[in-house]
Amino acid sequence: MISNPEQVPVQQPGEDVEWKRAHPAFMATALLRNLRGFIFPLVIVLLGDQGRGSRTGSLIFFAISAAILLLSGVVGIIQWRVYRYALTPERLLVNSGLIFKQERAIPYQRIQTVNLEEAPLDRLFGVSRMKIETAAGGSGESEVELKAVKRSDALALRERLLRARSEHGLAETLAGVATDGESLPEPMTAGDLVSSGELIRKLTTGELLLAGATSGTIGPALAIVGIGVQFADDIVPQRWWNRVPWDEVSGASTNLRVVAALILIVAVFAWVLAIAGTVLTYYGFELRRDGEHLVVQYGLLDRKRTTIPVRRIQAVRVEESLLRQPFRYATVRYESAGRAGSEEGGSGVLFPMLPRRTVEPLMREVAPEFAVDVDRPRLERLPQRALPRYIVGSTVSVGIVVAIVMIGVWYWRDGLPWWGYLPLVWPPLEIVFGWLGWRDAGWFLDERVLVLRTRGAARALMIAPRRRIQHRGMTANPLQRRVNLATLQVAVASGGAGGHYHLRHLDAATATAIILDLKPGTAHPTESRR
Image (cartoon, rainbow, N blue to C red; front, side, top):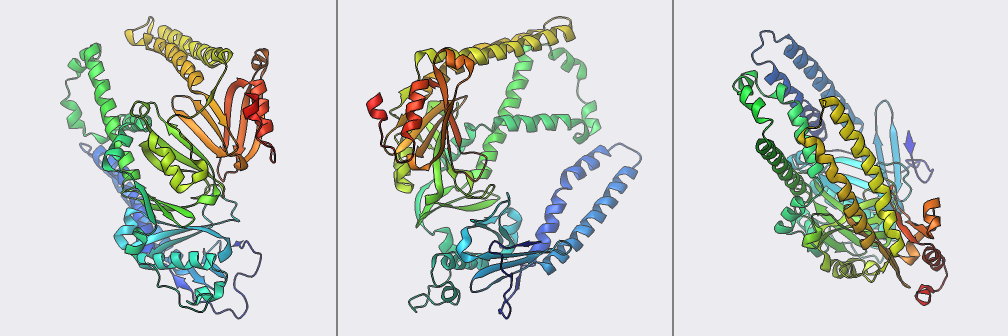
């Protein structure tokens, strides 16, 4: 398999190429990652065998695991032997694969970003992973990923690739000579790279903990707790279960206070897990500016550093979760034009949490064309006749689901227990969220930007410059047409599945005016229509 965007020979005849191999840690990290997958099954096997006379199952498990790990070690050695890369005056060459051979040639002028990542195992061995994105990729993976490159070499190689891309005289650049004949500066060191670029903002410890406490990851955390309960019988030794006073537990299960206390304990545990997950993900988050690129770096265990070309940002989305709205904090995300699945293509987090009033000053500093006062946006609200459309449809659907659930519980239990009435709380909540969705929805359009605000459980404000709008349109179902309403749809260029935004139940005439205003080359007539 040959991946070659320019459709030229991967290695030119007579071209002097100095091939390099990955660090030997390539083999060790691959083996340890495979070993990591056996930890959880191993714990279950060891605990499950306690108190049993026969250990045949454990011996079979150990034998199969040892064979798989031995095979993984052999494969890792072979992969390291065949994996190599080289720099030529014009391209980066990467060869890999034994059975399915891959030869990749990446011209320097096609390189968009060079990102460095370090997982805990990588940091243990002092190596980094380099993810190189190009403008010609088509898959969801990085165009090139250099694995297990010594950290100092990775920093120097990253600087070398980026300079080669930006300079006109690529051959002279890679030879260590600038286009004007002067020597280029020495490659950056690890300390230089960590502090490179202008620091715009960093996430404080208080903001990090608050972000975890108000994040939306408590749902996945509850799922993890539920999975742990499912496997509790296999993980917890049998002699511990024998000590549990099951008769008293059975009697307590009907006690409302005991059940409420258990639910509270599980919720608090899931909340702590959510905080821990946020801390692991966004620890040490920094936003820096390096020329025409933004650089974000974060992570406690898996340290990531991502480069975002400012010119490729198409839209900015300011999100306020339900728990963060009382604190007036928001998350800032970006939509970037690029290859699907790449680090800089698709959606990403520009800043995980910051006070809402500071969003506009931040955007003025990093991307001025997206600077809008999100604390008090000058939004045009939806008409009063749109309110029933936000409430009735979803509430009726929820009511049907609640009725089916309650009938099912009544039939299964031959009557409704106290907890069988809990679904009745759902329809009133749906009415409240419908009203909030209508109240918070709105739009704003001037000669510079289009702003749309929508709301589900979270409130989101989309900011897109007029020139970035790639698609505009409107739809209206029969119920909307009865009251002269429509749904406005806009889209920006995106390397991922995002980039599409809509505002429901807008006045049809207003939606038409917005579409006409967004037509390329059209002056801004919306102000005169209001």
